[in-house]
Structures are given as structure tokens and as C-alpha cells.
Amino acid sequence: MKRFIGKVGLITGAAAGIGRATAERLASEGAGLLLVDVQAEALAEVATRCAEVGGRAVAAPCDVSDPAQIAAAVQLCVDEFGRLDVLVNIAGILSLDHTHELTLERWNQVLTINLTGTFLFCKAALPHLLESGGNIVNTASTAALAGMPYGAAYGASKAGVLALTKALAVEYGKKGVRANAVSPGSIKTAMGSRQHLPEGLDWKLIERHMPLDNARGPEVVANVIAMLASDEGCHINGESIRVDGGTLA
Image (cartoon, rainbow, N blue to C red; front, side):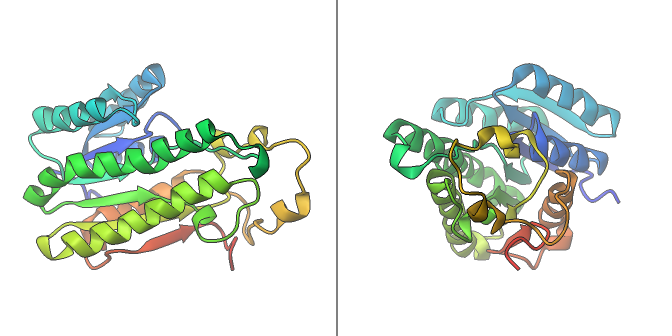
């Protein structure tokens, strides 16, 4: 399939995990890409890989909590490629804490990166997406759909992403811009490893979120993002698709 020939995408969180898998998938289908992440060295490696699989990619190190850097990244995309057709917001951080020990500083950091960063990229990209009739794919989480133990900040941030996505879908749908979300769960990434779990956790609570399927790699999420972002998803707007192996079944 070559669904993205002549299309330009901007992907945040592109240096690893779901972001990297999505960049490689869209590049393999012919997309031009502006890749965003704070990990400059890893981001450059992903850009090289995207070129190897058939796309053109520009690495743009960017802190998604900085409005000025976000505006500059979107402008760089338009300057380099002449247009913007797809915005994929994947950048995020996971924080698992006993809620009574969660600091306000950490709470604010999680919401700033996961939710406010997504909003700021949508805001900066929308004028260009309105010109191209493009679309947005945001990354939420199954943590937004059911109680996630130790994940108050993370779950709240991702629930906000879902609400933001639905608001954009209604506001801009008749103007030709779609907005959808994916809600991953049980995906094998560095962010989802056990190193993030707090001491003294209750494993019975954790096991409530075990999938019916085995945990799988980030490419399964990239597959769904590519469908939503392509013309094959033209009649899908305001939706969140779970990619979790039946975790919440």
C-alpha cells in the first residue's frame, strides 16, 4: 500500500515506541514527515530509517511543553514540505504513583506534556490542516477508559486527550478536518515497562488490566493510526479505537 504518496505528516514522540513505529509505517507508504521528539540523537536515527523505507523525513528536536518550539516545528514542516496533511500526537510520559504521594509538580508535568502539548500542536496545525483537508490522530490510552491504579495523573491526562479529540471532531468536521484517537493498552514499549511501577503496589489491581491477547509491539498501534490518517478512514471522525488485546473486554 502507498496511501501517503504526496501527503505530509507531523509525528510527535517519534524517537521511540509507537511514535517510531508510526513514522516508519507512514514513510513506507510514501509520506513526507516532520519528526518531533526531545531525544535528538534517536530522532535522527528514525529519520534515516524513514528514508531507507521510502519516505522523506526531517528530524526536529522539540519540547512539546514549549509553545514557541511547537509553533516553530509546525512552521518548519510547512516550510520544508509546503503543506501539512496529518498530525499524529504521540509524545507523552507515564507516571505511576500512589496518589497520596503524587506531587503537584509531577501532576502538572504529566498534564502539560500529555494533554497541553497535544492541544498546542493541534492549535498550531489546524490552520494548515484546514487548507489541506487533513486530519488529526491523537494518542489516548485505555487508562482514560477505566480506573488505572496508581495512574491518576496519567489517566486524567489521557481522558483529557479523548475529550479534546471529540471537541475538535465536532468543531472542524464540517470544515473538512477529521480528528480521531487511538487508545493503546498492553503494548511493549520502554514507557510501559515495570520500572515505572511504584513500591508496595497491589498486583490484584494491576491484573484487572491484563489483556485477553498477549502484549504486542508498537507496530499494531501504528497500523491503526495509518488507517485513521489515510483516506481509508475518511468516514471516521470523533472516534477512539482501542488497541489493547481485549484488556477492557
